[in-house]
Image (tube, rainbow, N blue to C red):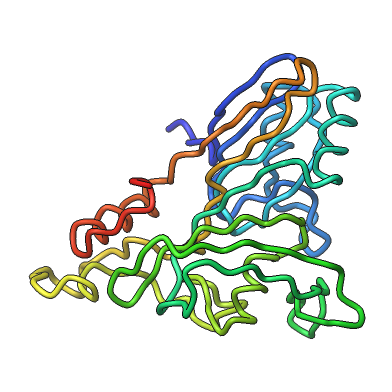
Amino acid sequence: MKQIQPFSVIYSDNDIIVFNKKSGLLVAADRYDKDAPRLDVLAQKEFGELLAVHRIDKDTSGLIVYAKNPESHKNLSMQFEQRKVEKTYHALIYGRPSWTEFRADQNLQPDGDDRHRTVVNKRFGKPSITDFRLIGTCGPYSWVEAKPLTGRTHQIRAHLANCKLSIVCDPLYGGNQKPVRLSEIKRSWKGDVFEERPLLNRLALHAYKIAFLHPTTNEKVEFVAPYFKDMDSVRKQLAKLFKTDPLSE
């Protein structure tokens, strides 16, 4: 049986490649697990050496960009460093925020506690900014859009945690990895609870859109990553029940 790749190619040319990766796949070496599967290593078998210009968390799904040559790598790295790259994430969170739009600008310190979490620290943290927007509420959950202007480790999760909010299936920052089950959100559900499979049992955070200047043409390019099947199943069910759909925006 052919193994299904945990990523797909959104775009590729001589200078850059854009992937849509599944949750659970690293994009760079992990200091705690040197042998864990990595997107760049898996993709190099087909596309040759890839140069990292940014990162997303292992547990986050969605868009990741690599450069294919040193010139493009330098150009894209500078765009990220100078905050010229526009990044948009979608997250399903527990509860309902008190805000419709909100800018989180607390200093963050990665690896700031004994659980290796990123924490708010005014003295030792680095400047970190995330713009949040409430897309809509759906029963016990809400869809939010997050646009990080900086690139700290776990930035979105840490800024939400500071608001007493947590992303669905995030045991690290929310203390809860309870999967999303249709039986718990649909009152008329009539299946067998012992046979039911969860709709989603991983971090409900997706790097949905990215925009930057192409390193060779200098033209603005924008890429969108479709939700993977698990997160899309949740989206469809919640949209049916509560008439809120993050993709109808």
